[in-house]
Amino acid sequence: MTVALMLPADRPRGPIAPPPASSAPGQGHLPVLLAEVLAALDPAKAPGPVLDGTLGDGGYTRAILDAGAPSVVAVDRDPSALARARAWAAPYGDRLTLVEGRFGDLDALAEQAGAAPLGGVVLDIGVSSMQLDEPGRGFSFLRDGPLDMRMEGTGGDGPSAADLVNALPEAALADILFQYGEERASRRIARAIVAAREAEPIRTTLRLAEVISACVPRGKPGQPHPATRSFQALRIAVNDELGELARALAAAERALAPGGVLAVVTFHSLEDRVVKRWFAARSGGAGGGGSRHAPVEESAAPRFDLLSRRPVEAGEEELARNPRSRSARLRAGRRTHAPAGPMDPRGLGLPGLTVATLKEVGR
Image (cartoon, rainbow, N blue to C red; front, side, top):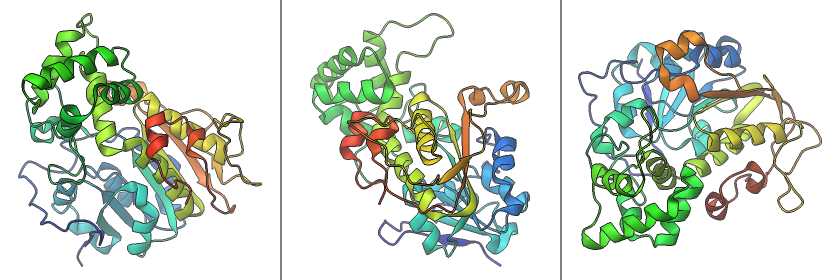
């Protein structure tokens, strides 16, 4: 039997390159909170196929299959992740379906794969270690490469980070850095970027890092690099990461069967706030983020039962093995029989930039 490979009909169908020789599964990226995610999903008892919305190096997907899930739909918007998966996927046969797409469309992708309704959904939000380590992707300020940052790679849709940096007005750049990077020096950095690009376009990661570092004092030893928040902000803007997250939460609610579990791992406060408020509102609890100006739509009956009132964090053993897990937070809920419904994205604590561009989240 062969592994199915699905490409969305409305997206480019370019050839998938063969995986590099060193891309053995698990070498490039350690899945965080793996035991805790498996405990939440309980794959062998899932009431339907499980969808991994962030395939990456396949850590969650392979563990979910090995734990007894009848089938997994593994989704990634990065064609190179799907190429690597083909090196290890064959033994799973038709239990594994690989799909190129965005997890904001996971309900439609599950339908296309014949996997609806779903018995579980897992999302690992943000950029992977592998993507950071590949200079050609443009995610890292420590490695020189083209200033791209698109999850789909250089052939992806939409503007690259270089497009934003070299074309946006100063005020718009400052808004991105402040709202998506929580960068307090956003105006100063935006002003420096505009001045630098007037002399010559900023095309590489190290050049942008130099411009930022020159106007932001380096912190004490052990503190983050001066460009950390700015690079995060540009990456989030380029990939509409918070908009995709909001769409994915709504899509998971629509796609999950009663008893199915949604498990979401986040790595910074912006993401975690969105997920926290989503689960609070959808479980009928307080703190859903609503107000008289931006009310949260609530159903008569909860749509999720929370598996834990507080986020699950990494234990000492995992922290010692994988420092990246230090900032990870897992929130999970079990789908009830209540029908899915719309939700005002303003109640999720999304930055204003995302709310302004987010359309029909609860569709």
